[in-house]
Length: 219
View 1 (cartoon, one colour):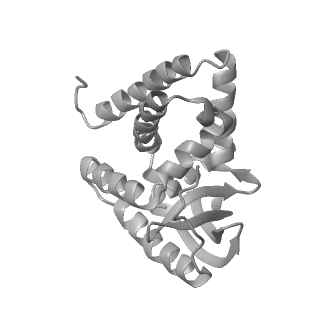
View 2 (cartoon, rainbow, N blue to C red; view 1 turned 90 degrees about the vertical axis):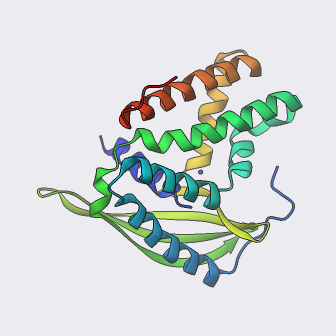
């Protein structure tokens, strides 16, 4: 139960900020803290949007603006990215974008009313800027409020500050995705086309479920 809750927190926070582009570079710690403060407030405001369809539309916009999906999608494929054909890469990038936008919608978001966070220190590391934050969540009346420490890894990409990873305790979100994708490909004897077929089916199922939440019949 706890691990599922932690995953929900990480997925929600990823929605605002989930080969490295040549233009990518670390940002100053002061800029990183200011960016995290500003967009954290924007995230919480967006989650309080009462209309679910409008909320999803706004969250999708935040995700596409603030997460470097090119970096994340290539990183999680690891060594398999190098052996993919141009067509396979194009197909994968399209499905991964849909996966990123569909995944956070599959989690219940009602707990965000009791969620606050405080931005801590920031420092440069290996070409990125890491921002620490303390997330405080009201679980229930009996358990009360609990605090969790997260780290956001940012860089500047084409003049825009974007998120490339979230670390909870010692667990990196993109390393977890890389491990998951590698395991799936290994189960399919390394066949990328089979992996892409399964990936498409799983994403389509997520999208169907999200449409049902909106009361919309899928085509």
